[in-house]
Length: 456
Ligand code: BES
Ligand code: MN
Image (tube, rainbow, N blue to C red):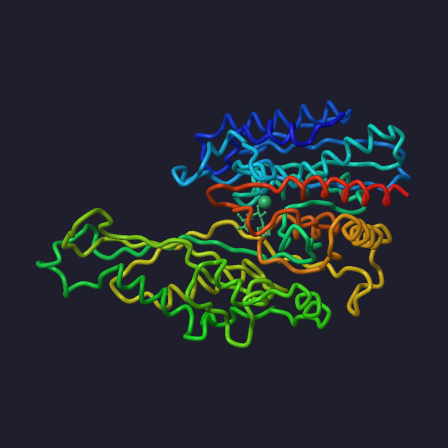
């Protein structure tokens, strides 16, 4: 019998941090673990090397008339830092209060296990299940999936034969209320470096005569939003689309309270674009965020210098038809235009991904030509969720990004059915990440039920 909790704990012991080359061993171990697991399940496994971290493709082939479901997951995790804030070792999973604590428990090793376990159990119950399944697991999601798009393109003929993608790498609001995610924000990131004098200068000797790069950077950064929190980059909002009435109705059912949300994030006041609630801002609007800023002296005490350099990291989240390349160029150009004379700006563009939206069946703007199996999958998800959870499913757009989901749509023509299996209290990307075991167990039953109805 497949034991999903045991398997998940095993997987969580591998420190598969993709962004830091010190964790190469953890990455390799995690990839081998998945490959081993899939072959134990009787699937044919292919490990595809890339410039960075291998892709694991495992298949259950079968009659070409059987539906073919592509299940996506990522085995890389975020760094565990700051480690001192963890209550237990991030790579030694512990069970406490119905949760498993470990880095990657929620993002994404727990939720992906729901689908792995579902397939394992279905095949144990019925070795003749009329369904073709491909697991596509990558190790670069947390660094922008640089290898996955070229892989999709090189295997387009084969992978585009699938009917739809099924995954769980998005959020639900509570253990009682699951969300079927129908949209993801796009993303574009960049590093900005301002250089003033070619070395730090004594601020007594030179302060007042040269443009301080920290000052210049603060001025430029501050100019990128107005007092209403609207981004001031010309053309930034081009391509932002209207929100459908049904989407507002779904969101209203979430019953999210602004005051509760304010307390949850721990701020004295919220700062949404005026006219929008916090939930609307996160799900429907683009943003320009500063992810970090630095420059000059950062140590204890004081140091009287005009620093040589200042730097910031920026990420923009995108919605609708916003084009990440275009938005990245606009922001870059706005920063260059606003950089004062005497300061040299260097801007390195990082990874990017387009926004994604799929309209589920039964909505006024649902496409008439949606594939039958996609419609079936959404309907099955709705039924399965209402059988397992107290509230019926909500169909909502999400504020986070999984850039490859839009790429899968453009290259393979496939839409994704995303079952949100992590919760706000799961601490994604933060210390003490955890996965709710009850949600995972119910998630397995939901996935089984969806796959069973697709198999017909
Ligand atoms: N699982 C998340 C995406 C996510 C986060 C969905 C929150 C829903 C709610 C994913 O692993 C992730 O963190 N993605 C990055 C993408 C980036 C590194 C390209 C993100 O959203 O920052
Ligand atoms: Mn994830």
